[in-house]
Length: 617
Image 1: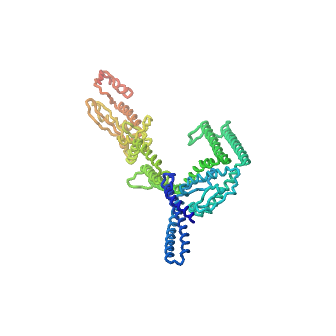
Image 2: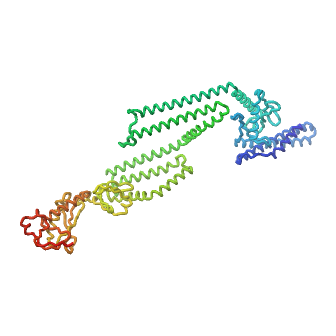
Protein backbone atom coordinates (compact mmCIF):
# COMPACT_ATOMS: atom_id res chain seq x y z
CA UNK A 1 0.00 0.00 0.00
CA UNK A 2 2.80 2.45 0.85
CA UNK A 3 4.56 1.73 -2.47
CA UNK A 4 1.35 2.44 -4.39
CA UNK A 5 0.85 5.71 -2.47
CA UNK A 6 4.42 6.84 -3.16
CA UNK A 7 4.07 6.08 -6.92
CA UNK A 8 0.78 7.95 -7.13
CA UNK A 9 2.25 10.95 -5.30
CA UNK A 10 5.24 10.92 -7.65
CA UNK A 11 3.00 11.07 -10.76
CA UNK A 12 0.77 13.69 -9.15
CA UNK A 13 3.69 16.06 -8.58
CA UNK A 14 5.25 15.27 -11.96
CA UNK A 15 2.20 16.11 -14.09
CA UNK A 16 1.74 19.78 -13.12
CA UNK A 17 5.29 20.57 -14.23
CA UNK A 18 5.28 18.55 -17.46
CA UNK A 19 6.45 20.24 -20.66
CA UNK A 20 3.73 20.20 -23.32
CA UNK A 21 5.25 20.64 -26.79
CA UNK A 22 3.46 23.09 -29.03
CA UNK A 23 2.65 21.16 -32.17
CA UNK A 24 0.63 24.00 -33.67
CA UNK A 25 -0.10 27.67 -33.23
CA UNK A 26 -3.81 26.98 -33.42
CA UNK A 27 -5.88 27.84 -30.35
CA UNK A 28 -7.74 24.53 -30.77
CA UNK A 29 -4.53 22.52 -30.52
CA UNK A 30 -3.36 24.46 -27.45
CA UNK A 31 -6.72 24.03 -25.73
CA UNK A 32 -6.68 20.31 -26.49
CA UNK A 33 -3.22 19.86 -25.02
CA UNK A 34 -4.24 21.81 -21.90
CA UNK A 35 -7.37 19.69 -21.47
CA UNK A 36 -5.32 16.50 -21.78
CA UNK A 37 -2.85 17.70 -19.13
CA UNK A 38 -5.67 18.70 -16.78
CA UNK A 39 -7.47 15.39 -17.41
CA UNK A 40 -4.29 13.51 -16.51
CA UNK A 41 -3.96 15.49 -13.26
CA UNK A 42 -7.60 14.84 -12.38
CA UNK A 43 -7.16 11.14 -13.11
CA UNK A 44 -4.10 10.92 -10.86
CA UNK A 45 -5.96 12.80 -8.16
CA UNK A 46 -8.70 10.20 -8.38
CA UNK A 47 -6.08 7.52 -7.83
CA UNK A 48 -4.88 9.35 -4.71
CA UNK A 49 -8.46 9.72 -3.49
CA UNK A 50 -9.03 6.00 -3.98
CA UNK A 51 -5.93 5.22 -1.92
CA UNK A 52 -6.98 7.67 0.77
CA UNK A 53 -10.45 6.11 0.93
CA UNK A 54 -8.95 2.63 1.36
CA UNK A 55 -6.65 3.88 4.14
CA UNK A 56 -9.53 5.65 5.96
CA UNK A 57 -11.75 2.58 5.68
CA UNK A 58 -8.94 0.48 7.31
CA UNK A 59 -8.63 3.03 10.11
CA UNK A 60 -12.45 2.96 10.65
CA UNK A 61 -12.31 -0.77 11.19
CA UNK A 62 -9.50 -0.40 13.70
CA UNK A 63 -11.24 2.51 15.53
CA UNK A 64 -14.47 0.67 16.16
CA UNK A 65 -15.65 1.53 19.71
CA UNK A 66 -13.99 4.96 19.69
CA UNK A 67 -16.91 7.17 18.75
CA UNK A 68 -15.02 10.48 18.53
CA UNK A 69 -12.32 9.09 16.25
CA UNK A 70 -14.92 7.23 14.22
CA UNK A 71 -16.86 10.51 13.59
CA UNK A 72 -13.67 12.28 12.53
CA UNK A 73 -12.75 9.48 10.10
CA UNK A 74 -16.30 9.36 8.66
CA UNK A 75 -16.22 13.16 8.17
CA UNK A 76 -12.91 12.91 6.29
CA UNK A 77 -14.26 10.01 4.21
CA UNK A 78 -17.38 11.98 3.17
CA UNK A 79 -15.23 14.97 2.27
CA UNK A 80 -13.01 12.82 0.05
CA UNK A 81 -16.07 11.17 -1.59
CA UNK A 82 -17.61 14.61 -2.32
CA UNK A 83 -14.36 15.89 -3.83
CA UNK A 84 -14.05 12.69 -5.84
CA UNK A 85 -17.59 13.11 -7.24
CA UNK A 86 -16.89 16.70 -8.30
CA UNK A 87 -13.58 15.65 -9.81
CA UNK A 88 -15.30 12.91 -11.84
CA UNK A 89 -17.72 15.47 -13.32
CA UNK A 90 -14.83 17.77 -14.20
CA UNK A 91 -12.85 14.89 -15.70
CA UNK A 92 -15.79 13.90 -17.89
CA UNK A 93 -16.02 17.50 -19.14
CA UNK A 94 -12.31 17.59 -20.03
CA UNK A 95 -12.54 14.25 -21.81
CA UNK A 96 -15.59 15.43 -23.79
CA UNK A 97 -13.66 18.53 -24.89
CA UNK A 98 -10.76 16.35 -26.05
CA UNK A 99 -13.20 14.07 -27.91
CA UNK A 100 -14.87 17.00 -29.70
CA UNK A 101 -11.55 18.51 -30.78
CA UNK A 102 -10.78 15.18 -32.51
CA UNK A 103 -7.05 15.92 -32.78
CA UNK A 104 -5.51 12.47 -33.03
CA UNK A 105 -2.21 11.18 -34.40
CA UNK A 106 -2.14 8.09 -36.60
CA UNK A 107 -0.19 4.95 -35.82
CA UNK A 108 0.73 3.80 -39.35
CA UNK A 109 3.76 1.53 -39.38
CA UNK A 110 2.88 -0.01 -42.77
CA UNK A 111 1.52 3.07 -44.62
CA UNK A 112 -2.04 2.40 -43.48
CA UNK A 113 -3.47 3.63 -40.18
CA UNK A 114 -4.07 1.07 -37.44
CA UNK A 115 -5.57 3.47 -34.86
CA UNK A 116 -5.20 7.00 -33.47
CA UNK A 117 -3.63 8.30 -30.26
CA UNK A 118 -5.40 11.26 -28.62
CA UNK A 119 -4.14 11.48 -25.02
CA UNK A 120 -0.83 12.44 -23.42
CA UNK A 121 1.02 10.43 -20.80
CA UNK A 122 3.04 12.53 -18.35
CA UNK A 123 5.65 14.42 -20.41
CA UNK A 124 4.85 12.51 -23.63
CA UNK A 125 2.31 14.20 -25.87
CA UNK A 126 0.00 12.26 -28.23
CA UNK A 127 2.17 12.84 -31.30
CA UNK A 128 5.32 11.50 -29.63
CA UNK A 129 3.35 8.51 -28.30
CA UNK A 130 2.01 7.66 -31.78
CA UNK A 131 5.48 7.89 -33.35
CA UNK A 132 7.01 5.75 -30.57
CA UNK A 133 4.32 3.04 -30.92
CA UNK A 134 4.80 2.98 -34.71
CA UNK A 135 8.57 2.50 -34.37
CA UNK A 136 8.12 -0.33 -31.83
CA UNK A 137 5.72 -2.17 -34.19
CA UNK A 138 8.17 -1.78 -37.10
CA UNK A 139 11.01 -3.11 -34.93
CA UNK A 140 8.85 -6.05 -33.86
CA UNK A 141 8.03 -6.86 -37.50
CA UNK A 142 11.75 -7.15 -38.34
CA UNK A 143 12.18 -9.98 -35.78
CA UNK A 144 12.80 -13.11 -37.92
CA UNK A 145 11.30 -15.36 -35.23
CA UNK A 146 8.20 -13.21 -34.70
CA UNK A 147 5.06 -15.03 -33.55
CA UNK A 148 2.12 -12.52 -33.49
CA UNK A 149 0.14 -14.91 -31.31
CA UNK A 150 2.49 -14.12 -28.40
CA UNK A 151 1.14 -10.55 -28.11
CA UNK A 152 -0.63 -10.08 -24.77
CA UNK A 153 -2.22 -7.49 -22.46
CA UNK A 154 -0.97 -6.85 -18.92
CA UNK A 155 -3.06 -5.00 -16.31
CA UNK A 156 -1.04 -2.49 -14.20
CA UNK A 157 -1.89 0.31 -11.80
CA UNK A 158 -1.12 2.88 -14.55
CA UNK A 159 -3.17 1.23 -17.30
CA UNK A 160 -3.16 -1.86 -19.54
CA UNK A 161 0.08 -2.68 -21.35
CA UNK A 162 0.27 -4.37 -24.77
CA UNK A 163 3.51 -6.41 -24.80
CA UNK A 164 5.23 -9.08 -26.86
CA UNK A 165 7.21 -10.24 -23.85
CA UNK A 166 7.78 -8.97 -20.36
CA UNK A 167 10.61 -6.72 -21.51
CA UNK A 168 9.12 -5.67 -24.92
CA UNK A 169 6.20 -3.33 -24.16
CA UNK A 170 4.55 -1.96 -27.36
CA UNK A 171 2.24 0.61 -25.71
CA UNK A 172 0.18 1.48 -22.63
CA UNK A 173 -3.57 2.17 -22.79
CA UNK A 174 -4.56 4.64 -20.05
CA UNK A 175 -7.89 5.48 -18.51
CA UNK A 176 -7.93 8.79 -20.44
CA UNK A 177 -7.43 6.88 -23.72
CA UNK A 178 -10.40 4.69 -22.87
CA UNK A 179 -12.61 7.56 -21.72
CA UNK A 180 -12.00 9.50 -24.94
CA UNK A 181 -13.23 6.50 -26.96
CA UNK A 182 -16.05 5.75 -24.46
CA UNK A 183 -14.80 2.34 -23.34
CA UNK A 184 -12.56 0.86 -20.61
CA UNK A 185 -8.83 0.24 -20.62
CA UNK A 186 -8.94 -3.54 -21.00
CA UNK A 187 -11.42 -3.55 -23.90
CA UNK A 188 -9.48 -0.85 -25.78
CA UNK A 189 -6.14 -2.60 -25.16
CA UNK A 190 -7.56 -5.92 -26.38
CA UNK A 191 -8.87 -4.24 -29.53
CA UNK A 192 -5.53 -2.57 -30.25
CA UNK A 193 -3.67 -5.84 -29.60
CA UNK A 194 -5.87 -7.70 -32.12
CA UNK A 195 -5.40 -4.93 -34.73
CA UNK A 196 -1.60 -5.04 -34.34
CA UNK A 197 -1.52 -8.86 -34.45
CA UNK A 198 -3.70 -9.12 -37.57
CA UNK A 199 -1.71 -6.42 -39.37
CA UNK A 200 1.59 -8.16 -38.59
CA UNK A 201 0.21 -11.46 -39.93
CA UNK A 202 -1.07 -9.77 -43.13
CA UNK A 203 2.22 -7.94 -43.69
CA UNK A 204 4.26 -11.12 -43.24
CA UNK A 205 1.97 -12.98 -45.61
CA UNK A 206 2.02 -10.18 -48.20
CA UNK A 207 5.83 -10.09 -48.36
CA UNK A 208 6.64 -13.74 -48.84
CA UNK A 209 8.29 -14.93 -52.10
CA UNK A 210 5.16 -16.45 -53.65
CA UNK A 211 3.22 -13.20 -53.27
CA UNK A 212 6.07 -11.19 -54.77
CA UNK A 213 6.10 -13.45 -57.82
CA UNK A 214 2.33 -13.02 -58.15
CA UNK A 215 2.68 -9.26 -57.91
CA UNK A 216 5.35 -9.14 -60.60
CA UNK A 217 3.23 -11.32 -62.89
CA UNK A 218 0.15 -9.19 -62.32
CA UNK A 219 2.15 -6.02 -63.01
CA UNK A 220 3.41 -7.48 -66.30
CA UNK A 221 -0.18 -8.44 -67.19
CA UNK A 222 -1.42 -4.90 -66.50
CA UNK A 223 1.37 -3.35 -68.60
CA UNK A 224 0.62 -5.79 -71.43
CA UNK A 225 -3.10 -5.01 -71.25
CA UNK A 226 -2.40 -1.28 -71.28
CA UNK A 227 -0.14 -1.62 -74.32
CA UNK A 228 -2.76 -3.69 -76.12
CA UNK A 229 -5.46 -1.14 -75.27
CA UNK A 230 -3.33 1.71 -76.67
CA UNK A 231 -2.68 -0.23 -79.90
CA UNK A 232 -6.40 -1.00 -80.35
CA UNK A 233 -7.24 2.64 -79.59
CA UNK A 234 -4.81 3.93 -82.24
CA UNK A 235 -6.03 1.48 -84.90
CA UNK A 236 -9.67 2.30 -84.17
CA UNK A 237 -9.10 6.02 -84.61
CA UNK A 238 -7.14 5.44 -87.83
CA UNK A 239 -10.05 3.37 -89.14
CA UNK A 240 -12.52 6.14 -88.25
CA UNK A 241 -10.42 8.76 -90.06
CA UNK A 242 -10.12 6.53 -93.10
CA UNK A 243 -13.88 5.96 -93.25
CA UNK A 244 -14.69 9.64 -92.81
CA UNK A 245 -12.10 11.36 -94.97
CA UNK A 246 -10.50 9.00 -97.47
CA UNK A 247 -11.86 8.59 -100.97
CA UNK A 248 -14.33 10.62 -102.98
CA UNK A 249 -17.36 9.33 -101.09
CA UNK A 250 -16.43 10.83 -97.74
CA UNK A 251 -19.21 11.51 -95.28
CA UNK A 252 -18.22 15.12 -94.60
CA UNK A 253 -19.76 17.87 -96.71
CA UNK A 254 -19.54 21.63 -96.43
CA UNK A 255 -21.16 23.07 -93.31
CA UNK A 256 -23.99 25.34 -94.51
CA UNK A 257 -26.20 27.46 -92.27
CA UNK A 258 -29.07 29.48 -93.77
CA UNK A 259 -27.54 29.03 -97.25
CA UNK A 260 -24.22 30.43 -95.97
CA UNK A 261 -21.18 28.19 -96.19
CA UNK A 262 -19.64 28.42 -92.73
CA UNK A 263 -16.92 25.82 -93.33
CA UNK A 264 -15.86 24.27 -96.60
CA UNK A 265 -15.50 20.48 -96.78
CA UNK A 266 -11.71 20.77 -96.65
CA UNK A 267 -11.78 23.08 -93.61
CA UNK A 268 -14.29 20.81 -91.88
CA UNK A 269 -12.07 17.83 -92.65
CA UNK A 270 -9.01 19.45 -91.01
CA UNK A 271 -11.08 20.48 -88.00
CA UNK A 272 -12.50 16.99 -87.51
CA UNK A 273 -9.03 15.40 -87.86
CA UNK A 274 -7.75 17.60 -85.04
CA UNK A 275 -10.76 16.71 -82.87
CA UNK A 276 -10.26 12.97 -83.47
CA UNK A 277 -6.53 13.18 -82.69
CA UNK A 278 -7.29 15.07 -79.49
CA UNK A 279 -9.84 12.41 -78.46
CA UNK A 280 -7.29 9.65 -79.17
CA UNK A 281 -4.74 11.31 -76.86
CA UNK A 282 -7.39 11.86 -74.16
CA UNK A 283 -8.39 8.17 -74.26
CA UNK A 284 -4.75 7.09 -73.97
CA UNK A 285 -4.22 9.45 -71.04
CA UNK A 286 -7.31 8.12 -69.25
CA UNK A 287 -6.22 4.50 -69.82
CA UNK A 288 -2.74 5.20 -68.42
CA UNK A 289 -4.10 7.15 -65.48
CA UNK A 290 -6.52 4.36 -64.56
CA UNK A 291 -3.81 1.70 -64.96
CA UNK A 292 -1.31 3.42 -62.68
CA UNK A 293 -3.39 3.06 -59.46
CA UNK A 294 -3.91 -0.62 -60.30
CA UNK A 295 -0.18 -1.03 -60.82
CA UNK A 296 0.74 0.85 -57.64
CA UNK A 297 -1.78 -1.07 -55.52
CA UNK A 298 0.01 -4.36 -56.25
CA UNK A 299 3.19 -3.53 -54.29
CA UNK A 300 3.10 -2.54 -50.60
CA UNK A 301 5.78 0.11 -51.09
CA UNK A 302 3.72 1.96 -53.70
CA UNK A 303 0.28 1.19 -52.32
CA UNK A 304 0.08 4.60 -50.65
CA UNK A 305 0.33 6.29 -54.06
CA UNK A 306 -2.86 4.56 -55.20
CA UNK A 307 -5.06 6.66 -52.96
CA UNK A 308 -3.24 9.83 -54.07
CA UNK A 309 -3.75 9.13 -57.78
CA UNK A 310 -7.38 8.14 -57.32
CA UNK A 311 -7.91 11.22 -55.20
CA UNK A 312 -6.71 13.41 -58.07
CA UNK A 313 -9.61 12.07 -60.13
CA UNK A 314 -12.25 11.40 -57.53
CA UNK A 315 -11.84 14.62 -55.52
CA UNK A 316 -12.64 16.96 -58.45
CA UNK A 317 -15.38 14.60 -59.64
CA UNK A 318 -16.83 14.39 -56.12
CA UNK A 319 -16.59 18.17 -55.70
CA UNK A 320 -18.24 18.72 -59.09
CA UNK A 321 -21.03 16.26 -58.31
CA UNK A 322 -21.57 17.76 -54.86
CA UNK A 323 -21.59 21.24 -56.43
CA UNK A 324 -24.24 20.13 -58.92
CA UNK A 325 -26.38 18.60 -56.17
CA UNK A 326 -26.02 21.70 -53.99
CA UNK A 327 -26.87 23.90 -56.97
CA UNK A 328 -30.12 22.07 -57.77
CA UNK A 329 -32.38 24.24 -55.50
CA UNK A 330 -30.86 27.40 -57.00
CA UNK A 331 -31.24 25.95 -60.51
CA UNK A 332 -34.92 25.32 -59.83
CA UNK A 333 -35.34 28.93 -58.64
CA UNK A 334 -33.57 30.19 -61.79
CA UNK A 335 -35.83 28.09 -64.04
CA UNK A 336 -38.95 29.42 -62.28
CA UNK A 337 -37.76 33.03 -62.74
CA UNK A 338 -36.98 32.42 -66.44
CA UNK A 339 -40.36 30.74 -66.95
CA UNK A 340 -42.25 33.67 -65.40
CA UNK A 341 -40.36 36.31 -67.37
CA UNK A 342 -40.58 34.35 -70.63
CA UNK A 343 -44.36 34.15 -70.54
CA UNK A 344 -44.67 37.71 -69.24
CA UNK A 345 -42.77 38.87 -72.34
CA UNK A 346 -45.00 36.73 -74.55
CA UNK A 347 -48.09 38.37 -73.01
CA UNK A 348 -46.68 41.84 -73.61
CA UNK A 349 -45.76 40.85 -77.20
CA UNK A 350 -49.34 39.82 -77.93
CA UNK A 351 -50.62 43.15 -76.60
CA UNK A 352 -48.02 45.05 -78.68
CA UNK A 353 -48.95 43.14 -81.86
CA UNK A 354 -52.60 44.08 -81.37
CA UNK A 355 -51.65 47.76 -81.05
CA UNK A 356 -49.46 47.54 -84.16
CA UNK A 357 -52.27 45.95 -86.17
CA UNK A 358 -54.69 48.64 -85.05
CA UNK A 359 -56.96 46.31 -83.06
CA UNK A 360 -56.23 48.23 -79.84
CA UNK A 361 -56.14 52.03 -79.74
CA UNK A 362 -54.56 54.07 -76.95
CA UNK A 363 -54.99 57.84 -77.07
CA UNK A 364 -51.68 59.58 -77.69
CA UNK A 365 -49.86 56.31 -78.45
CA UNK A 366 -49.00 55.86 -82.11
CA UNK A 367 -48.93 52.43 -83.72
CA UNK A 368 -45.32 52.78 -84.87
CA UNK A 369 -44.29 53.18 -81.24
CA UNK A 370 -45.43 49.64 -80.42
CA UNK A 371 -42.32 47.67 -81.47
CA UNK A 372 -39.73 50.18 -80.14
CA UNK A 373 -41.57 50.33 -76.82
CA UNK A 374 -41.70 46.53 -76.71
CA UNK A 375 -37.94 46.33 -77.33
CA UNK A 376 -37.30 48.75 -74.45
CA UNK A 377 -39.62 46.82 -72.11
CA UNK A 378 -38.02 43.53 -73.18
CA UNK A 379 -34.53 44.88 -72.42
CA UNK A 380 -35.62 46.18 -69.01
CA UNK A 381 -37.34 42.90 -68.14
CA UNK A 382 -34.27 40.90 -69.16
CA UNK A 383 -32.06 43.21 -67.09
CA UNK A 384 -34.36 42.77 -64.08
CA UNK A 385 -34.38 38.99 -64.63
CA UNK A 386 -30.55 38.92 -64.63
CA UNK A 387 -30.52 40.92 -61.38
CA UNK A 388 -32.86 38.36 -59.79
CA UNK A 389 -30.90 35.38 -61.11
CA UNK A 390 -27.44 36.73 -60.22
CA UNK A 391 -27.49 35.76 -56.48
CA UNK A 392 -28.40 32.18 -57.42
CA UNK A 393 -25.41 31.70 -59.73
CA UNK A 394 -22.55 29.55 -58.33
CA UNK A 395 -19.68 31.69 -57.11
CA UNK A 396 -21.64 34.94 -57.37
CA UNK A 397 -20.62 35.87 -53.83
CA UNK A 398 -16.90 35.16 -54.32
CA UNK A 399 -14.50 38.13 -54.45
CA UNK A 400 -13.12 36.92 -57.81
CA UNK A 401 -16.58 36.87 -59.40
CA UNK A 402 -17.40 40.29 -58.01
CA UNK A 403 -14.04 41.68 -59.15
CA UNK A 404 -14.59 40.44 -62.71
CA UNK A 405 -18.11 41.94 -62.70
CA UNK A 406 -16.77 45.33 -61.58
CA UNK A 407 -13.97 45.17 -64.18
CA UNK A 408 -16.40 44.38 -67.00
CA UNK A 409 -18.70 47.18 -65.82
CA UNK A 410 -15.85 49.69 -65.86
CA UNK A 411 -14.77 48.61 -69.36
CA UNK A 412 -18.34 48.86 -70.59
CA UNK A 413 -18.88 52.32 -69.09
CA UNK A 414 -15.56 53.69 -70.41
CA UNK A 415 -15.76 52.19 -73.88
CA UNK A 416 -19.43 52.63 -74.69
CA UNK A 417 -20.16 56.29 -73.96
CA UNK A 418 -20.70 57.11 -77.66
CA UNK A 419 -22.74 53.96 -78.18
CA UNK A 420 -24.97 54.80 -75.22
CA UNK A 421 -25.40 58.37 -76.52
CA UNK A 422 -26.49 56.97 -79.90
CA UNK A 423 -28.87 54.49 -78.23
CA UNK A 424 -30.51 57.25 -76.18
CA UNK A 425 -30.73 59.43 -79.32
CA UNK A 426 -32.28 56.52 -81.23
CA UNK A 427 -34.90 56.12 -78.52
CA UNK A 428 -35.71 59.86 -78.59
CA UNK A 429 -35.92 59.83 -82.41
CA UNK A 430 -38.34 56.92 -82.27
CA UNK A 431 -40.80 58.86 -80.13
CA UNK A 432 -40.22 62.14 -82.01
CA UNK A 433 -41.32 60.40 -85.24
CA UNK A 434 -39.37 62.69 -87.62
CA UNK A 435 -39.37 60.06 -90.40
CA UNK A 436 -40.24 56.49 -91.31
CA UNK A 437 -38.55 53.79 -93.35
CA UNK A 438 -38.83 54.80 -97.02
CA UNK A 439 -39.24 58.56 -96.43
CA UNK A 440 -37.24 61.00 -98.55
CA UNK A 441 -35.38 63.17 -96.03
CA UNK A 442 -32.59 65.71 -95.79
CA UNK A 443 -30.30 65.39 -92.76
CA UNK A 444 -27.64 68.06 -92.76
CA UNK A 445 -26.33 68.04 -96.33
CA UNK A 446 -27.47 64.48 -97.04
CA UNK A 447 -30.62 63.88 -99.13
CA UNK A 448 -31.97 60.40 -99.67
CA UNK A 449 -34.43 57.70 -98.66
CA UNK A 450 -34.39 56.17 -95.18
CA UNK A 451 -33.64 52.45 -95.62
CA UNK A 452 -32.94 51.40 -92.04
CA UNK A 453 -33.34 52.63 -88.47
CA UNK A 454 -31.44 50.88 -85.67
CA UNK A 455 -30.75 51.65 -82.03
CA UNK A 456 -27.39 53.21 -82.98
CA UNK A 457 -27.57 54.53 -86.55
CA UNK A 458 -29.86 55.60 -89.39
CA UNK A 459 -28.98 54.52 -92.94
CA UNK A 460 -29.89 56.71 -95.93
CA UNK A 461 -29.68 55.79 -99.63
CA UNK A 462 -29.12 58.77 -101.94
CA UNK A 463 -30.45 59.13 -105.50
CA UNK A 464 -27.03 57.90 -106.66
CA UNK A 465 -27.53 54.63 -104.70
CA UNK A 466 -24.97 55.63 -102.08
CA UNK A 467 -25.68 54.16 -98.64
CA UNK A 468 -24.73 56.67 -95.94
CA UNK A 469 -24.68 55.73 -92.24
CA UNK A 470 -25.55 58.59 -89.88
CA UNK A 471 -25.15 58.16 -86.08
CA UNK A 472 -28.40 58.79 -84.22
CA UNK A 473 -26.73 61.43 -82.04
CA UNK A 474 -25.94 63.38 -85.23
CA UNK A 475 -29.53 62.98 -86.45
CA UNK A 476 -30.82 64.31 -83.13
CA UNK A 477 -28.48 67.32 -83.09
CA UNK A 478 -29.12 68.23 -86.77
CA UNK A 479 -32.24 69.62 -88.39
CA UNK A 480 -34.14 67.04 -90.43
CA UNK A 481 -36.32 67.80 -93.45
CA UNK A 482 -38.93 65.18 -94.32
CA UNK A 483 -40.22 65.48 -97.89
CA UNK A 484 -42.55 62.48 -97.61
CA UNK A 485 -44.53 63.13 -94.44
CA UNK A 486 -47.21 65.29 -96.12
CA UNK A 487 -47.60 62.97 -99.09
CA UNK A 488 -49.21 60.22 -96.99
CA UNK A 489 -51.99 61.89 -95.02
CA UNK A 490 -52.31 65.29 -96.74
CA UNK A 491 -54.49 65.73 -99.87
CA UNK A 492 -52.28 68.52 -101.22
CA UNK A 493 -49.01 66.61 -100.98
CA UNK A 494 -45.51 68.09 -101.25
CA UNK A 495 -44.89 71.39 -103.07
CA UNK A 496 -41.88 71.33 -105.35
CA UNK A 497 -40.73 74.59 -106.82
CA UNK A 498 -38.15 76.13 -109.10
CA UNK A 499 -37.26 79.71 -109.97
CA UNK A 500 -36.64 81.21 -113.42
CA UNK A 501 -35.59 84.78 -114.32
CA UNK A 502 -37.20 86.51 -117.34
CA UNK A 503 -36.58 90.01 -118.67
CA UNK A 504 -38.99 92.90 -118.20
CA UNK A 505 -39.89 92.86 -121.92
CA UNK A 506 -41.86 89.60 -121.49
CA UNK A 507 -45.48 90.06 -120.28
CA UNK A 508 -45.83 88.46 -116.83
CA UNK A 509 -49.17 86.86 -117.74
CA UNK A 510 -47.54 84.98 -120.62
CA UNK A 511 -44.76 83.86 -118.28
CA UNK A 512 -47.31 82.63 -115.71
CA UNK A 513 -49.24 80.70 -118.36
CA UNK A 514 -46.09 79.13 -119.72
CA UNK A 515 -44.90 78.03 -116.27
CA UNK A 516 -48.29 76.57 -115.33
CA UNK A 517 -48.49 74.75 -118.67
CA UNK A 518 -45.03 73.28 -118.06
CA UNK A 519 -46.05 72.13 -114.59
CA UNK A 520 -49.25 70.49 -115.85
CA UNK A 521 -47.31 68.61 -118.53
CA UNK A 522 -44.95 67.15 -115.96
CA UNK A 523 -45.68 63.53 -114.92
CA UNK A 524 -46.26 62.84 -111.20
CA UNK A 525 -47.44 66.47 -110.71
CA UNK A 526 -51.00 66.78 -109.38
CA UNK A 527 -53.55 68.63 -111.50
CA UNK A 528 -55.43 69.54 -108.34
CA UNK A 529 -54.51 71.53 -106.42
CA UNK A 530 -53.43 73.51 -109.48
CA UNK A 531 -49.88 74.76 -109.89
CA UNK A 532 -49.31 78.44 -109.15
CA UNK A 533 -46.61 81.04 -109.80
CA UNK A 534 -45.05 83.50 -107.37
CA UNK A 535 -43.03 86.51 -108.47
CA UNK A 536 -40.36 86.48 -105.80
CA UNK A 537 -38.30 89.55 -106.80
CA UNK A 538 -37.94 92.43 -109.26
CA UNK A 539 -34.24 92.65 -109.93
CA UNK A 540 -32.26 95.16 -111.99
CA UNK A 541 -32.35 93.18 -115.23
CA UNK A 542 -35.06 90.56 -114.78
CA UNK A 543 -38.06 89.37 -112.83
CA UNK A 544 -37.82 86.14 -110.68
CA UNK A 545 -40.75 83.81 -111.27
CA UNK A 546 -41.22 80.77 -108.96
CA UNK A 547 -43.44 77.98 -110.21
CA UNK A 548 -44.99 75.77 -107.47
CA UNK A 549 -46.71 72.45 -108.05
CA UNK A 550 -47.95 69.56 -105.92
CA UNK A 551 -46.87 65.93 -105.98
CA UNK A 552 -47.49 62.79 -103.98
CA UNK A 553 -44.19 61.18 -105.05
CA UNK A 554 -41.55 62.76 -102.88
CA UNK A 555 -39.13 59.91 -103.58
CA UNK A 556 -39.10 60.89 -107.29
CA UNK A 557 -38.21 64.55 -106.75
CA UNK A 558 -35.08 64.43 -108.94
CA UNK A 559 -37.06 63.02 -111.89
CA UNK A 560 -39.90 65.50 -111.37
CA UNK A 561 -37.50 68.46 -111.31
CA UNK A 562 -35.78 67.21 -114.47
CA UNK A 563 -39.10 66.81 -116.31
CA UNK A 564 -40.34 70.21 -115.05
CA UNK A 565 -37.23 72.02 -116.28
CA UNK A 566 -37.47 70.35 -119.67
CA UNK A 567 -41.16 71.28 -119.99
CA UNK A 568 -40.42 74.89 -118.96
CA UNK A 569 -37.97 75.13 -121.87
CA UNK A 570 -40.52 73.71 -124.30
CA UNK A 571 -43.44 75.89 -123.10
CA UNK A 572 -41.38 79.10 -123.15
CA UNK A 573 -40.10 78.34 -126.64
CA UNK A 574 -43.64 77.64 -127.78
CA UNK A 575 -44.83 80.94 -126.28
CA UNK A 576 -42.00 82.85 -127.97
CA UNK A 577 -40.44 83.91 -124.68
CA UNK A 578 -36.67 83.88 -124.51
CA UNK A 579 -34.97 82.64 -121.37
CA UNK A 580 -31.92 84.85 -121.05
CA UNK A 581 -29.58 83.52 -118.45
CA UNK A 582 -27.27 85.12 -117.54
CA UNK A 583 -28.83 88.46 -118.42
CA UNK A 584 -28.16 90.17 -121.71
CA UNK A 585 -28.05 93.75 -122.95
CA UNK A 586 -29.04 93.49 -126.58
CA UNK A 587 -30.36 95.21 -129.69
CA UNK A 588 -31.85 93.51 -132.70
CA UNK A 589 -29.51 94.17 -135.58
CA UNK A 590 -30.17 91.24 -137.82
CA UNK A 591 -29.21 88.62 -135.13
CA UNK A 592 -31.48 85.61 -134.72
CA UNK A 593 -33.59 85.02 -131.63
CA UNK A 594 -32.52 82.43 -129.09
CA UNK A 595 -35.72 80.47 -129.60
CA UNK A 596 -35.06 77.30 -131.68
CA UNK A 597 -36.15 77.62 -135.28
CA UNK A 598 -38.56 74.69 -135.13
CA UNK A 599 -40.71 76.64 -132.63
CA UNK A 600 -40.96 79.64 -135.07
CA UNK A 601 -42.76 80.08 -138.37
CA UNK A 602 -40.75 80.98 -141.53
CA UNK A 603 -41.82 84.62 -141.40
CA UNK A 604 -40.98 84.96 -137.75
CA UNK A 605 -37.63 83.43 -138.45
CA UNK A 606 -36.76 85.91 -141.20
CA UNK A 607 -38.16 88.99 -139.49
CA UNK A 608 -36.68 88.14 -136.17
CA UNK A 609 -33.07 88.73 -137.16
CA UNK A 610 -31.19 90.95 -134.81
CA UNK A 611 -28.79 93.67 -135.86
CA UNK A 612 -26.48 93.29 -132.92
CA UNK A 613 -25.99 91.13 -129.83
CA UNK A 614 -23.75 91.96 -126.97
CA UNK A 615 -23.20 89.67 -124.07
CA UNK A 616 -22.35 91.15 -120.72
CA UNK A 617 -21.50 88.93 -117.77
